[in-house]
Image 1 (cartoon, rainbow, N blue to C red):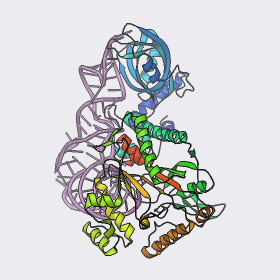
Image 2: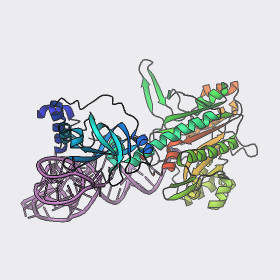
Image 3: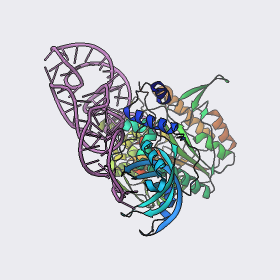
Image 4: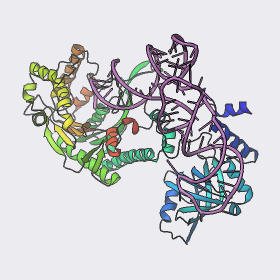
Length: 503
RNA sequence: GGGCCGUUAGCUCAGGGGUAGAGCACCUGACUUUUAAUCAGGGUGUCGAUGGUUCGAAACCAUCACGGCCUACCA
């Protein structure tokens, strides 16, 4: 018996706890009584949420309709020949009441073998108890699935962050707020799609694996295709493929895609994350600013019902228009730094030293300016703010400004001191683009910069066919979800974050 | 990568050289309108792992593993 038990339940080398043994015994007792503890479909009259909604005005003396519902048993309160319980599905939870003389002595005895966490189907009339609680007065119940492991404590839920991330299913089943966050994440993405589709954008899918990983500064993951005997990279951005589609005449495209970057992990970074990239022909970066503030405020209104969002103890007002400031103005306003002077390498180095920046030998003026910006200006950017006109060296895919070729038509949107959106008027001159790529290659050699953009000859060729003036945008979905759900860590809004192997 | 902190029962946590603790959960019994049900009884444990110090280690020391926060890099 014991051997069979272990066979059926062992996962890894873990020993069987007393709690599991009790549950396994209950399962076996039921099986011996001819009960199928892993039942099949259970036709319901609706979800628990629907039943609760439908009967929310039911008076204490009234009797509601007869319902069949299914869910996970989350609590059981025995009272001898009667018992209360709570069952829960994704839409909500409701109390159930079982009385021996209602469902019969034999059936009531089976309750002894029911454990919290089991899935059951129940049938009965809706009414209120003496305390006014909406309750299904059971006429019958059916085993749908036996649970062999005890759920976490009902009051505190599962707190251990390591187990929460490694066994998200336990986190989800015991912490309703976690479930709520992931449902919001899903809504944000689906609402984003329908919003963009309503503006005539077409959703597309571009390759996740290719010979060149371009479109961003990042180190890629590598993999290998056996049949073709070919090394491949996982994408670090969708940008260059999407712009090829603009060349091809798909004037408004977007992709909400998984991106992979082989870099550090912290509260704001997971190796795989999700980004919206969107390209709009005949538009420019001012259109992108309008679009991003409208999109973000639309999502807040539609999903949260408010423009006031609290994140990390900071109150954010996401009602448009968002503040717009050039990088040069931002430097002056928040750090009393003259950005024009920063273009002199020696001066930039001095300032960088003042901020105790580690420059890693990447002594490129644009790079240093950006680093100084990160430490001197970014900490001030709590309310949503567009920072415009980035240095050309760190913006190799953006069109340069006509009145100042050291800058580009690029902006980033900051909220709660974090970058959420990166967008620009796309560079569509193939000669300029090729030179920018070559500059990146020089950086790669000069500074051993493994994150520099690679040269993508096919992309240049595409530009040679002609890409209309285009505005493009990238939105970090994970960061946006973090803001909208007040989640301080990216791991709280990625269902299965990457964890180190244990044992 | 560096610094600090954590890992004790199924879960939430206390304990800090001398027999392993509490609440919830669980087990036994009582209870036909409870809801963090109640009442009476019962601790169910490789104290993250491995070494060391000690008469004696969950505790002290060392190393390792995993995790968290801060920091550095990146979105």
